[in-house]
Length: 135
Length: 135
Image (cartoon, rainbow over all chains, first blue to last red; front, side, top):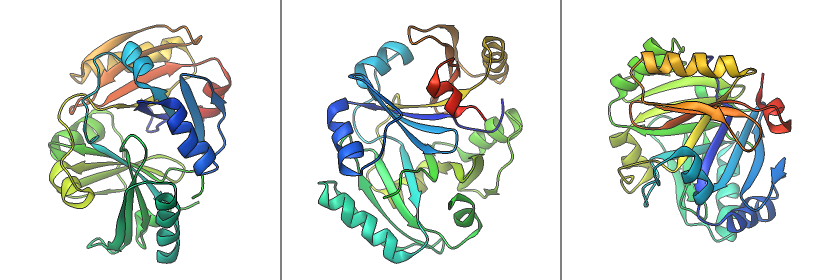
């Protein structure tokens, strides 16, 4: 198994609500969308798939647990100022935001929650891993 | 906010167990590791971060729900035969596997669960999105 991820699929309660947040709110462009799923390119050879909970459960099996998901997606930027700007944008779209702060690992980051509660970390990381993930 | 994901962070119960599965089992190479986290490059400008549940909860907030996570990661390959080979590799590492089958969207895929139950879909997708995610 090669060391790569092709898709990140999030099971969402309301695909239209997710579409409004990601496509209309953030102005992201889908590669494919229908009533069941919205697929967004989020990197080279990488798609973020927002799939209806019903479709997800039917194919993947067992219904997911309600509540806080044990994952976070991160979006890294080059400066602390950009971290604050993105978090302000998310707040303006109605997302719950945890304001950014300095972290013991040397960076500066905060979080917001998408409409299903999936957490996005917005981060400036001055270290090696931070340099690796910046375009 | 630009249309890209920098990190996928999974909250894991036992970092050493995750390291054994991903680093020793799958032979994936970490970019960074300590007692709290293992970070694996899984694409251009993309890291998979396996972070202790304690560290995750302390920074991200509220403890995640136990049970089945509402996400899946996908690893796409070019042929049906490769799908079966990767699922066999996962089974040999002790992962629970749902054997591959033809899907109504035109492809062929199956799933396995990592040590925390996070699902990986191993897929061959002959369509446009399948072509996009292949290296």
